Length: 150
Image (cartoon, rainbow, N blue to C red; front, side, top):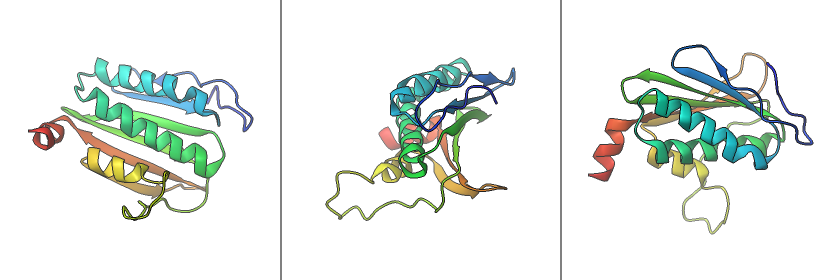
């Protein structure tokens, strides 16, 4: 895959679009690229007719940030339309361990990202990689967002 960054930084990878409702981007270990990666994924989802742009932007930001902070390596982020009004976001990295939400009563300034993902996504989880690392995914459902806000 072209564009994978090095641990010291690098360039945001090229958008790999399969011509349908799926896009993948390699994100280097540099949070400076987070906004551009998020915007590319949101723009792709918008082109598929997905309406919950704000929720998608927050979930993408949280998942990429977690991957970079905890793995210390480049990560790959993929978004795909899985049904009408339903987008799955998946961020893969080679870091060890399985992420889990922190206790909401702990007085910490960091570590609450998965609680945010849990609140915004219809569902989320972790898939182990076939080689090493894992993929953290979240399913966003535009209909589910309407129920939460209504």
